[in-house]
Amino acid sequence: MAFVSRAMLKIFIHDRQTGATTFLSLNSSDMMATTLSLSSDGRYAAIESDAANLVPGDTNNRSDIFVFDILTGSITRVSIDSYGNQAANGHSFTASISGDGRYVTFSSQAANLVPDDTNLKTDIFVHDRQTGITTRVSVNAGGHQADNHSARPMISGDGRYVAFESNAANLVPGDTNNRKDIFVTDIP
Image 1 (cartoon, rainbow, N blue to C red):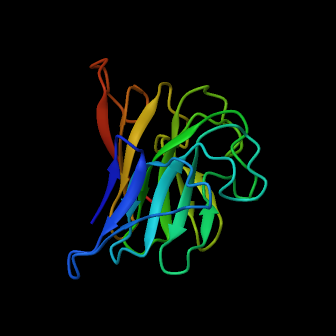
Image 2 (cartoon, rainbow, N blue to C red; image 1 turned 60 degrees about the vertical axis):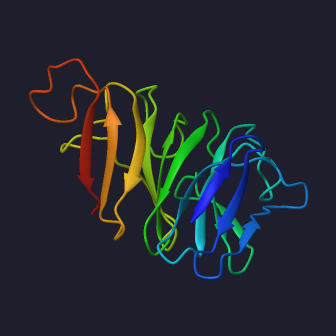
Image 3 (cartoon, rainbow, N blue to C red; image 1 turned 135 degrees about the horizontal axis):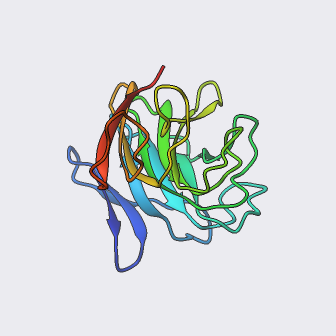
């Protein structure tokens, strides 16, 4: 079990079997981290942080999504494009990690994570930690980008499905209610 202390914005891990609670120290300066999603075995923690010193080369001055390996202490940034480039022009937030820690879904305002992201909207992405590929999933069946903002992604334990909310009216035919809707997409 994990929780974020709102007063301090620090992450703690509580082992329900041993009863031990430990502070999840991300680096020597203990920079703030918010939002948290744990893999099924508790080994991987997907977090959002605006710290610039968690990984080398973080110069975007934006919040990013990271995966912390609790067993080894290593940390990697996953709010990147398929070539490893950082999100250059927008914040990334609201991480959710699959049960095995392979897939991480997140929202991002950045327009450089996938080619042809020209909608100027917050989109939903999935980063495959095994292949390094980042895919935008807030698109319709024809691959057309959402015409409005999408947020709050959650990935299924097996990494196959992503649920998210969106104000977009073009993700499915007949969406004329002018309200936020919940969408579920099957990850290929």
